[in-house]
Length: 447
Image 1: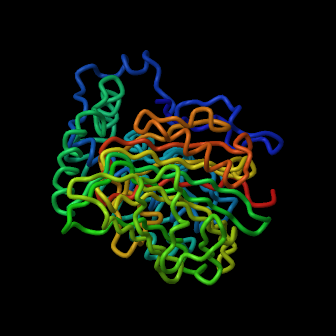
Image 2: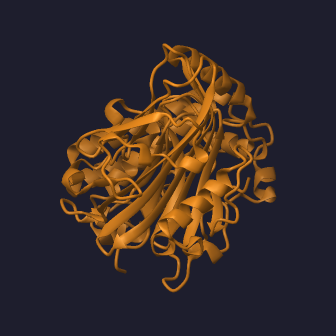
């Protein structure tokens, strides 16, 4: 699998897709000479210390950004921040450096010391930063201070241990936790009375017009089984945009509605025969498609693939901010494998930078927003760049995945070469997790 790497340039050229960009590692690696010059006896962090460090890094990263966003635009870089807050430039530069990438262990090494961080937050209070936001950052700084005391004793010694981890990385989220996730699948299957070999999710997202986004959503359960007394098999999708209820339009691919019996929601060439009965229900932007496999014998398996099409506003009129932020796959049914694809039209792909997280699913389909550090599972996955078109759409986890992708593009009469694909592929995805593909805005609509 090809791991997705962020582009070296911050903003792709407007005249060409960023797929042709040369990709570089997310976090700049230290040279071997630098690592070797560090004290050789420093111990790498243990698994538990690494998990704690990642949580602290995520929390302080998020809270620093909340404070910096309240500063005027000219004070969000190192030099301007130093002049505005009247504190030493080195402290401000290190803070800006620490938050420029997604939070990771090296965030802790990039930060200034605890004293410098407290000076920063007190200066931010003096220039009018919201007291609640500043208090949250103080709590994060105190947690960072406790981490230093508990596992290193000083910030410089923490850096020594972080450098030791670069040479001897701890295997978090790798093959060591597959057995744990497999056990969770077995238990959740017993609890729910059902399971599935492979779940597939294909999202094709385009600009319907200058003000409206369009998504074609394909959802499939391949090799699904349900005990006679088991829970129903439900395909769940929703807008997660509380302000857009009246403007969020759900339809089937034949443009019929979604309420009541909706047999045309099924993509027949990829659904078992006899076809299960499917009903659509939901309100205020939420959609539930309930699949009734009443014709199944005990222990029999079925394949079921559904398709819907939605449109929603590109810009939130309440905030004037872009409303395209994330695409979710919610693991509400125990599955052994997940293939989760998002295809962005080239017009959108130039505007956003994607990332992937496995997050705890809040009750009521609510989402964690900016506080991902609080709900991010230690077991994470990778984002794969499929590139332009669908030549790389096949998957070892289901032999017909490439065929389904081609069928979908043909059905909606879109040219695959106009789209760029991204993939999250997971063995034993965490039951009741949300696999969240986030899209950071790099370019404003219309720019």
